Image (cartoon, rainbow, N blue to C red; front, side, top):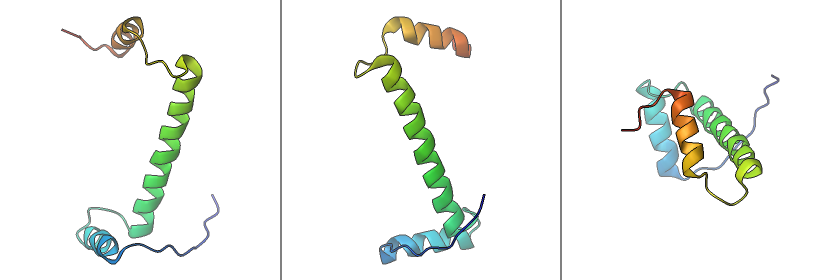
Length: 77
C-alpha cells in the first residue's frame, strides 16, 4: 500500500493524550493508531452493510441468534 502524508487537526487535549499513549508504548504511533481506527471503521461499515443486505432494517431474529451460537460454539445457557 502506498503511503502519503497528510495533516489533520485535533483538539489539543486529544493530541496530548495520543502522544502520551505513544510515549508510554500503548499505541505504536499517533498515525498508526489513527490508521487502525480508520481500518476498524471501514471493517465495521462492511459488516454493517452485509447485515443490512441480509436483514434490511429488521434486527436478526431468535433463529438467527441460535444458528450463530451453534456456528460459534457458544453455549447459550
